[in-house]
Image 1 (tube, rainbow, N blue to C red):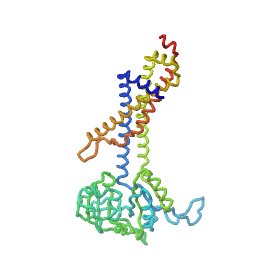
Image 2 (spheres, rainbow, N blue to C red):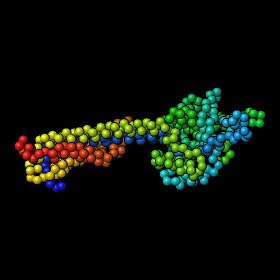
Image 3 (cartoon, rainbow, N blue to C red):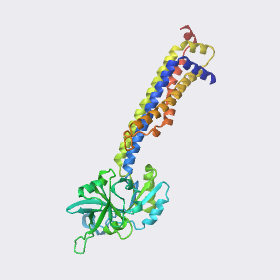
Image 4 (cartoon, helix red, strand yellow):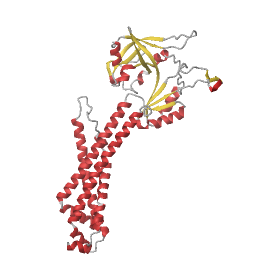
Length: 413
């Protein structure tokens, strides 16, 4: 093998310009590979962060109760004891034990109990439907980053306080310090009427999370106020979790569902379209990276075929000295391996530098890049391994062609 390596290196050094072009071609292919990987992986990370940054990764809630039938009915129709849609919402009673269980699981970094319900928020004659989230003040920023999203006022969820979105504040015409009326429907009364429950709250803060549905229709109050508003004597409506690795959320949800007998869902269950988009994006990325590797293979194979044609006499002399076909094959495969190795290392360095330069050039005033490229996710190890492998494999056919040269015929030509 040492002899073949010396001959391969000698051939490359003797044709410096051609070897340089080959290394340059491999480098360009590797730069394209790492750039596409960094761009697509960075875009995927940004989309995932945008989706999961303001919502829970895993949600635990009571299973939906199916009304029980109380007697058989003719023609196979069931008669229900409770009409669907009018039964009282379930609550998680033993939620503290569940919080302790979830908190001990690997990868879980936040467990937040909440009381959730629909209500109307009124200021004067303006009345809007809202989604109310009751949460303990110390956990207010663990699911959605409310603390750093306050545009006016402070995140104060004490008793009698409310925090609302900026779009909702604009629609209602309220600001920090104003009083609003929060009203929730009550249970049906003895005479068939419904007694609504209402409370007057003071706006202590206004946030902007950048999600229209949240900024327009979500309000936050303290857990005690929400319990009174929605008549939840004890327990909570749901438990939300944040995990360290968002892609492990389905596994955590499955484990918690089995352990608690609650309905457990992950953010991926609620964002099927995002999964489809990410898969399509990954497929596109893989196709572009495959084409970049194909250009490397074509370039190396073409150049080595040319080298075989130019060195027919040299190969014939080597064969006449007793050098076997295997040695000839190894010589040219080693040429492809060396070209791929040097080109891959140069391409990885240039690719990382180009990605860093593009990241700095696209940085906006708020510190976020306009182009979602992540230089750290350029898949550089894969780029080196694939480029070297493709270059070596591309050299096999020219090497086989060289090994088939007849020594006498080559010397005579």
